[in-house]
Every structure is written in C-alpha cells, then in structure tokens.
Amino acid sequence: MSRPLRYADAVRLLGGSGPVAAALEGAVGEALTITAGPVPGLVLGLFGAESQIISLSRSLVSGLGERLSGLGRFGRTERLAAAHAVIVVAAYGEALAETPFPFDVGQLTVGRLDAVRLATGDAPLDRRLVDVADHLLRTGVPLPAPHQPYESTLLALRDFYHAASRRMSAFVAGCAVWDTLNAADRQRTQDLFEGQVLDRALVRYEELYRQLAAQFTELTFWTDRTDHRATRESVRSLTDIVTRLAEGGVPPARLAGLGHAGAAALDAPVLGVEEGADGMAIPTLREAYLSPDFRIREFTTGDDLTVEEEWAARDVRPGLDAFLADFLTAPQAVAAPVLLLGQPGAGKSLLTKVLAASLPAADFLVVRVTLRAVPADADIQRQIETAVRQSTGERLDWPDLVRAAGNALPVVLLDGFDELLQATGLNQSDYMERVADFQRREVGCGRPLAVLVTSRTAVADRARLTPDGVAIRIEPFTPRQTTQWLQIWNGRNAAYFADRGLLPLTPRPRPTRLGQSTTTAAAARPLRC
Image (cartoon, rainbow, N blue to C red; front, side, top):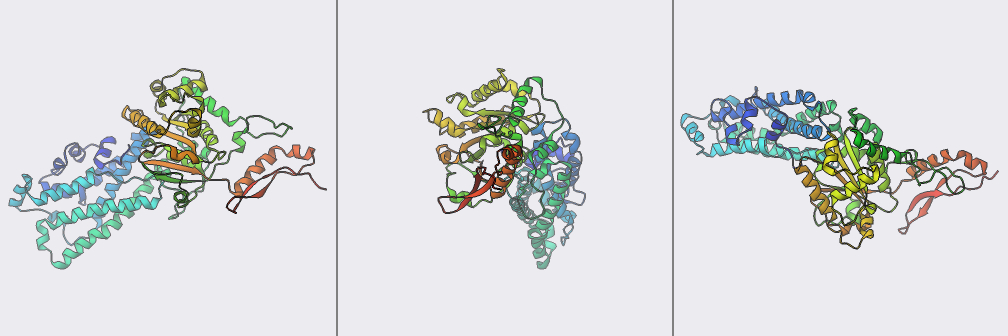
C-alpha cells in the first residue's frame, strides 16, 4: 500500500458483490453500462437517489466488522484504508443526490442518434463520461496520515472532489438537458458543482469518518492528534495505545524469546546497574522512562535533514512513543522507512527498547537490531537474523520468522546508524536506500513490514535519502519533564538522601552557547538545618 487506494481496488479488497462491483472488475468503459443505456446507467448508478454506488458502499462499510474478523495487524490496516476510500466516494455521491439541481438527474439522457454514437465510443460526451468514471473509480483517494495535520487531508479531499465536479459539470453540459436550461439555470448548475456539492461532500465525509472511527479505534490514530480544529484526546501513554490494539492472541512459542527479551529490558536499571557506586538506587527503565517531545517532517531524495531552519518550521509535539504506536496502524508505515534523529543521549535507543517491550506480540513482531553489534557489511536481512539470534539464542531465517508470526506485522528497529558508520571504514551512505529496497522487496513477497532507523542528527547528511520518507527529531527535555524525571529518582532514593542528610535532587538552569538556558539536574546538596 505504497500508493493511495482506488475505489475500484477498495471494493475488490472488501469483497464487494453485485452489478456495480462486477462492472468494476472490468475496464472503465464496461462500468458505463451498468444498467440500460450507457449514459443513464452510469449517472443513475453513481449519483441518483437510488445510487447503486452509494448502496454498495454502505453495505461494504456496514459489514466491515465481519470482514476484519480474524485478520492480523496489516490485514486490518489494509481493509480500513479500503473502507476509507469507499466512504470518500460515497460522500460525493450522497452530496450529488442531495443537491437541488435545476433539472432531474433522470433527464440526463441523449437522443437516439447520440446514443448510437455513444455506444460506438465516437462522441465527445462519451469521453467526458469516461473521464468522470475514471476519476471517481480509478484515481487514488487521499488518505489521512498520523504525521500530517487533519486539515491537509481535508484540503486533498476538496481537490479530489473539485476535480470530480469539474468533470461532472462538463458531462452535464454535453447532455441534451443542457439545451433546455436557461442561462440562469446553467450558471446555477455550475455554481452548485463548484460550491454546494463540495461543501456537502466534505461534511458528509467527516460524518462517515467519525462513524467509522467510532467502530474502529485505529482510524482515530490516523489523524494528527495535535491539530486544533476540534477537541482532541489528551496525550495517551503507549500502554493505553497497545491495550486498545491488542487482540488477545498468543504469539507462537518460538517467538516468545523475542517478547521475553524485550520485556526484560523494561525491568532492567536505566543505567545498567541496580545501584550507584555509593549505594544510590537506580530506577528501572519502566519506572524512569518519559516519552520525549518531537518534531516531524517528510523527506525525499536530496533533502538535508541537518538544516535547522527546516526543523524550526515544524511544531513540537508531545508523546513520541504513543505517536509511533499510532503510526504503525496506518498504511504509510509499510511504505518507507522512518528515520529517528536525536542528539547523543536524547533517548533514541531507550525508545526502541520501550517499543520492543510494549507493542503487543499478537499484533506486532518486533525485532530490535543494535547495529554496532551486527556485521556492518551484511545485508539487512542478515543483520536482522543476527539480532534475533543474539536475543533468543535461536537461528531463524527471516521468512520463517515472519511466517511463524502469523498475522503480526513485522516491525524492525535498526538502532544506531551513526554507530554503524563509526564501526567500519566502509561507505554506508546507501544504507537508507538498502533499507527501503528491503522493505519494497518484502511488500512484493507478501511480507509487509515497518522499519525505523535511529541516528544522531549530526550524521543524517551522510545517508542518501529515499522518496516518501518520514523523519522524526527528538527534542530536549522541557523543564517540566526534567522536574518529573527528578521526582522519580527522588522517590526511589528518599531513604538514601535522609540517611546522609541530603536534600533531594532539584532542577537548575544551564546556559547554552546561544545564551538560552535549559534545565538539568543539580547534585544532591547537604541538608541545612
């Protein structure tokens, strides 16, 4: 699903049946003869009060829950994307049916001579009719994305609907009924196509989308939670996200090792030891982890991800772990690798550990690859297989591992591109390209997967970028986050401080080179009575 779904493909994917679905299996020209006569058949089949397209769309969406039963993570995502394509076209059809045009849709017929010319395909009106059908049935439908504002989706949909209205208006202007309209009614018809139809279609789309999202939680994740058009949910924790996603399945026994290794990482001390040198308690990753803020941008070949001005133009968002859990439910997750950037110590590796431990095994097969610990000159598949053996002690081929995972979506976390560069003198500038090639190959083999690559921001320009990618940059802790983090440490060490007559750790400002300040932890100070 690296490209937007077309309505015709969506109907096939959802198992649609009936005359309209059957016609969509053929060429567009065949879809024009759904009922008696080429022109009335298509128009009434698409846009009439008894629209067959609307009827088909409603039946596909109303039965979606049954169609999703027993599917895995990617299967659900694929069919939800298909349902979205269906409601986009249905909303336009309903808008046309509800618009008070100054003529009856049933009057969009032609005379006997014109009908013969249309049947032979030798008439401009026939080509305009094909143009209408081709756009609505065969053009990729805009799809929401977690990394894009909801307004962007609505703008793209308005363009889609506007293009459909231009084509429909041209078709109507070529019909016999056009000659019966006076100048005012002709202008009104064009104005309705350019205005009211678009507005009605967007309103209806939003109604249908909300209805669909109420049934299927993932759809609420596909829209940017930071947009301010409407009240949004408060930032959710990753635990909340995965609890709602989990289907309650049990991962195969041979995959249990990966899940155990990930879970163990959450209960390990955040600094690798249980106590500091002088007895201070070290919290576990589960206790101490705070989800960082982040910025996000799309990239393509030739972009430079080290340019600060490009990042400064993007809004800061909260809750990176929850965002990534959202992103993994969206079709875009398998289309291209995600590049996660941050300064040293920003928490890139910790985030991959949290994801590996927290994503439900019933929905996701997560493999975390520490790139400095695998052969630097190996291909992507061998690097993954090496990491699996290091984590579980089992030697598993990648295709066998994916098959053993059943319905779970594979998620590969390639941690430390910058360390891969340092570990070898080999030129690794094509690494992101090789990752993207691997991802495309797997999709082609029926094994779609999501891939996330982490790296220090400073070396991002040493990788050749791929089209249609998404880059995320982790932001420094805010004063509020620093205070919250210190409260965790102070809580674990309250007795330690009291026994030694020390005050708890407190935040203090630290000047930067630009004259700004950030907040860091001050050392524990003696308690003064």
